[in-house]
Length: 275
Image (tube, rainbow, N blue to C red; front, side, top):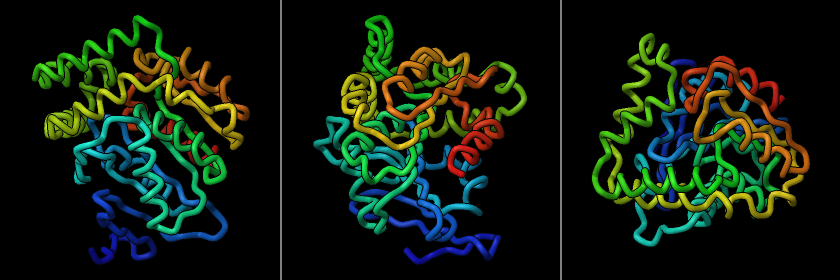
């Protein structure tokens, strides 16, 4: 597709599909800074990053995309493993001639980011892991597998409502229902087969994502919300300890959807880390 001009003529937006992957690039390539890649969570798409793109695009080239089986990306029939999502990211960056980037991953996107950094440590300048998981306990794994079974049984609407209750504070749901409804619509519009495949990877691959972290030498920041019950502060602290050059950041008052509910706090942390 041709480039599309944004309202600000200094900035550019390009959207396209490569190898079945829908992606968008914002801003302009800058020889002094590495591009920033934003990877969304399971059941979501590139649009979750609207606030972060707005904060970053005047300073960096920003790349967002839809993971396999999400949004406008293809749903290959053989997607079963975390490495499939790692390969998707590597193929996209090769197509864009990006040899090194700062990688930002949210939730399942954080698992993809971990595995990508372990597989291609020389290609990752910095690693920002948001509200992601690390070595679930047996109880935590049983919970997420139970939600997978509910999804497989077709209980998507009930699961979506329960997820929104965990992801956002009650106060935010009351003060910004439009933002919450946008996430709800995205979750309910997923292709069921693609969502189930991705959710099973999300539910079963936290140990795989943690493999190889000792070889990830780039600076890393591991952030979560103080009230995130799925990507807990203890997970963030454990993940930061497993990386050679990382620190945890726990944001008070926030749950899972910190990039949306706590956009200002997250953006400050992101800009400070990438500077």
